[in-house]
Image (cartoon, rainbow, N blue to C red; front, side):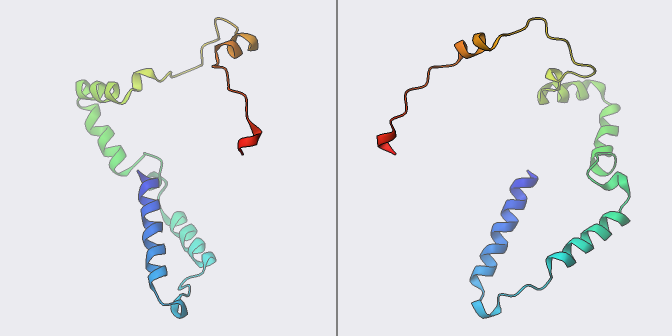
Amino acid sequence: ERNAMGATKVLNAVSLVMKSPATRRGSMLGYDDVLRVMKSTGDDMLAKYRETAQGGLAADYEAVMEKQPDKWSQVQKMMGADRIQYGPRRKATALVQYEEVSDLRAPRPPHDMGKC
């Protein structure tokens, strides 16, 4: 969702720039200035409000769900969390040879270099 929103903002920004007169297309802020301000803001921000799911809406949601264990298990099941393995990984019970795996793949048609 965040990537889609970021891409939308970029497209909107490019659209605005392209609609402005070519003589007025100048940067209002330098890239280094933006990075400096972003770093300063991040340094000032408490760690729990960064993208750590330790604070803000994520923490509130988790607190509400802890009070409703039945709903929490429904949400986890709906999200597919039951498929996620926690803890140490299991050891493989059977070794698969390369030949066995390559036999499972669908055969590829030969490439015709004349059609390039």
